[in-house]
Image 1 (cartoon, helix red, strand yellow):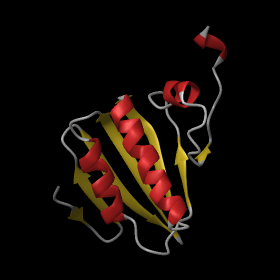
Image 2: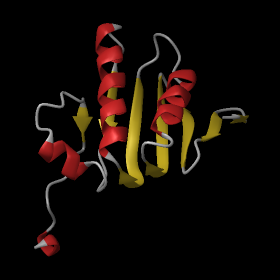
Image 3: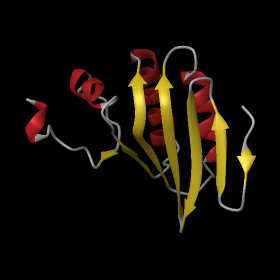
Image 4: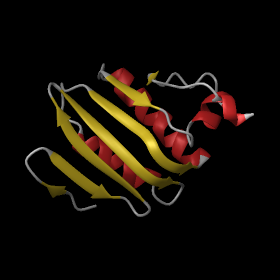
Length: 123
């Protein structure tokens, strides 16, 4: 995990997934792309921890995630618990890879925003 930094962006490669941090006013937006599985979910959560600044609210945008394994979801829920215990303000923007897991694990307690329902064409 080697961050590449510019004035307001950091990018971390997590072996199949990539997280980029963008400063947007008082908050940080972390955009995750790629696939999250047992091989990289730990690296990804570690990168997110490094990119989040204490006392700064953040948004974890997962719309560009193509695949999320149950192991990645489990690590995300453990991270959510850490954030809750530390009273960190954050939200998750769900994408198509996360939505099925949110339905299966309905008691996830993730701070999900912008969760769109099925589209008319989704049958």
